[in-house]
Structure formats: structure tokens, C-alpha cells
Length: 495
Ligand code: GLU
Image 1 (cartoon, rainbow, N blue to C red):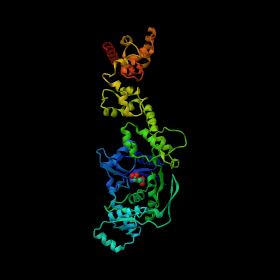
Image 2 (tube, helix red, strand yellow):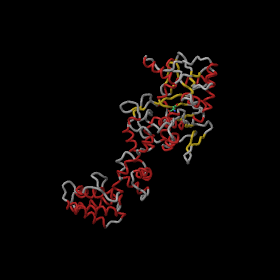
Image 3 (cartoon, helix red, strand yellow):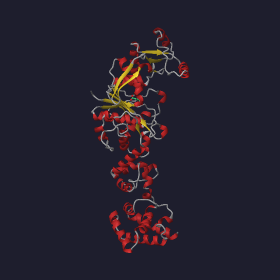
Image 4 (cartoon, rainbow, N blue to C red):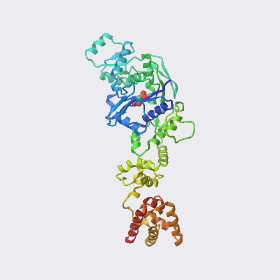
């Protein structure tokens, strides 16, 4: 079978990590099997649309490096272009297709018009709820006379079209993750296929499109599992074979409640904005519900593609563990070539109001190398290295003294270091050379490491905690180091 899979988001807001996981799994599955991965925009629920929702989805996919073969593509100028022979891939541009397929169902007695007003449906619901009965449509219009129905439609009465569900029996299907699944038909409502605004519901459009777009596998979240019997019955009503279904487990908070917006960030763009790397997020999201047999935790996209199998997807809910994401992100930050890190970090500096334009990628990379072990995200870098970029450092003068060290002693040590450095060239400003020379200075005088290196490190960083003085000096270069030492000595003298 030719693999053709799709990501079918609704443009109702920023992309939830759960939706992104569907995109990723479909992508991996298609790439692994040399198949086609396409994007289809399910925008038939007009009330839930958000402005620029489609562009937002396509941009998120691009930011995450997830490519696709067919569907709506974003042009440079921000407009959308449909590519692929089975398009358009945006459902609001396919209304006639749904309408003509609905007519087939009406002709075969699989669907019927319904004229019930929203008020009647509301009342029905309230009565059912009060009687503690399952809520659902009572099939009031199911057996209306056809001619009468035609006349009412012609007269312009508000109409929706509903699917005729079987009275009894079961609907069964195979799910690649859950095995055989069956639902009692009696629990299925005569749900709406086409709404009064002329737009199809999710179910109708989704099934027609998956058939016409030749979807081989429907890989989606578990929240759609209960809709699947309706879909299976619709395929049958049209006389079509359903695709292979595979429902991915729910995403859970550590307390096992459903992962939702209330618990904080759930949108992919929020993670990117907060300084998580696409490759770390991809790695993390891939492992939410899918576990290859080995213990490996760090995967590139290519390795994921190689390893991904639907049979290794779990049916149990997958816990979204922020600490693991932080851990992975830290790993990727440390493994990245420094110049690349600099490039990726620049927008975060800009946002923090720090200009980095005076530095080349190589120079900025060297600065970042001092702190990247200590941060979890790109967004922490500007603050972490601010002492390297600052023209003047803010710190209490007393911090320059090691423990109970008298100011005079700190001055003496700093002055000796200053004198020694004065003799050096910029080329001597390497970690090893500085370390050797300063350690020799300390031992010649019989000083302690703490009482010399502490004042030195604080004059260079202003901080209680920072990378070591040799590393800082090597990065700052002679000129800045000398200036910082002079400032520290002056401050101590004037204290
Ligand atoms: N439009 C649905 C969504 O937003 C698609 C579900 C499916 O893949 O069938 O997730």
C-alpha cells in the first residue's frame, strides 16, 4: 500500500504540543515508508477560527523544520498557495464537494434534513439532563415526509442534515495502537453532517477528504477515538474502505490530569519563544507515547525517522515531564557548534535589549561557551552572560574581598595581577597560559588561591558565582580585563 498520511489541524489558535505530536508522527511515518505527508486545514467550524490561524500553523511547522509534500504552503509575502494534485487542501475551499457527497447520502437514505430549532434542541437537552438520561438528538425529523421536507427547504426554512445511525449492533475497527475497538451503535447520536451555514461538520469533511485524498493511515490523538465509529459508518455509507486508524495516547500532566492550557504553556510557539530548541522539542515530543525498545533518549530527526514504528506507540497516557524537556534542551545546547549557538541566541539578546552586533558569531559563541553549561534555554543566555557584555559592572565593593580579607590585601593582589598582565600580549590571553602565569605569581609570593583569585574573579564578573577567572579573561581579552581590574582597585581604594 502506498503510504499517504496527513496532518489535519484546525486553525483555532496556537498549535498545542499534542497536535504537534500528530504532525510529527505522521511526518516520521511518511518519511520512514517513503510515502507522502500532506497538510489539510480543517476550518469548517467557523465560530472557532482565529485570525491568521492557517499562516500560524504553517509557520510553526516551518519553525520546527517539519516539511510536507502537499497542502497549503506559505509564500514569501505571507499568502497561501495550494500545492498537490488532490487539493485544494483547505476545507473551506471544498464546500461543493461536501455538498454533492451529502446528496449521495440523502439519495441512499443514509442522511436526512432536520428542521429542529436551536431552542427545541436546548429544551430537549435540558429535559434529558433533568431525567439523568444520555443527551442526544431524539430523531424527531428522521421520518419526515420527503416531499414536505423538500417544500420546507425551498421555503427557506433553516435546515441541517443529520446522519442516520443504526439502532443496534456494534461498529468495530482495527486500531494500530489499540487493536480491535468496538462501540455500541445505540450510543451514537444522529449527529449533524452539514450545518445550517452550509459548512460540513468535522466528521463529514474529514471522511470525504481522507477518501478523496487517498489517506492510507489516520494517525491522530486519542480524543478522536470516540468519533471513529461514526467515521467508519460513513465510509460504509459511501461504499468506501476506511483507512488504517492509529490513535495516539493522551498527554497528561505529572498528576495524570489531561494536559491543558490551564497548567501553563502548551503551545509549540511558546516553547520556542521561551528558548527551547526545535530539535530538543522534537526529540521530547517524539518520546511522548512512543518508546523504541532500547534505552536511547537523544535522537536526531533522521534517527527518529529510522526508528519510528506505530507498533511501539503505547495506548496508556503519556506524562509530559518538563524536567526531561529541560534536560534534553540543555543537552542540545551543549552539543551545538558555538557559532550556530550564537546565531540561534541572537534574537533572545535582541529581545532582552542587548545588542550583539559588535560581535561576530565566533566571538559571541566564545562568550556563550562560558555559560552554556549552566543554562537550560536560549532565553537564559542574555542574563547569564550579561557581565561579559556590560560596559560597567554593578556590584557591592565589599564583594571584592575574600571572606574577611582586608581591602588593602585585595588591592595588593589585584595590583600584582594587573602588573603581570600588563606585560602580556593579547595572544597570551588563553586559559592555559593565564592559569600557569597566575599560579606561578601566587606561589612565588606564598599567597593563597582564594585570597587572590576571588578578588580577581569578582572584579571581572561582579558576581558571587561565575565561571573561573582564567576563562573569563580569555574571553574578555586584555583591554577589558585591564579596565575591570583598574575599576576594582579604584573602588577598593575609595571605599
Ligand atoms: N481537525 C482535527 C484536529 O484538529 C483533525 C483530527 C484528525 O486528524 O482527524 O485535530
